[in-house]
Image (cartoon, rainbow, N blue to C red):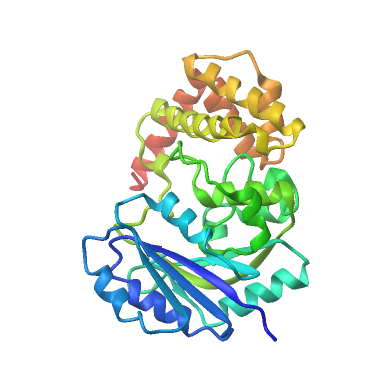
Length: 329
């Protein structure tokens, strides 16, 4: 007998694409699925759409009495999982029919605890924008190099939550989610926790259409590309790392002892950088340990921005002038 997979779907003001997404999940080739949905006090027609499915035996619907936010809503759903496997779904995407079947197949073939994959980035009407999210976000090289090392998801997130299928046991060390920093989202946390405690597998095939629209919470926008001053870029980079490593340190008891020490040193390093304005001579060994698995140019660019902002400002102005001349800014 086939094993059941629970798909968890948190909703909030998702009327525009929700029905299409639910139907794509119900139309999976793998039929042993349960879909549990929790609405976080939507103010649009989301509830009316969900009511259409209340008689479907594959679906269980919860309605929060007060708005608890996406992280707590997802955590609420994951605590309801009783099947051997679970998957995460977003309210605005579209799943290809083989997504569940192929994800479970990949997980078992690789004897993994969690499988995640690439996605096709599409517009509101499901027209292709980028054939590969992993290529566009420059993640595929890192994933292929570090798939079964803690470095995969340590410095930044490489695991896209809506592609995940994982064993129920992983929830024992994933939950509860930390939620104090907007720079460390739930899929980042899931990725780092499983990479430290289990085995991951990656599917290069795309079984999800990752819809981009005006209301996305997380998408493909590269925020720093819109900045006109190097100081803005540097401030963002440092704030992101303060959020990530601050969260790690707050949860240090959930990391191995050798990683606990690096968490603390990394946080101290970025706290120190926050106070530097032009040049920094300290902590370069910490930077190297964090970035040594990255591409050479990524390493150099980040090193200069973080530690030599006086030089980076000059390079940034030249680059911005070139982009303006070429009509790209």
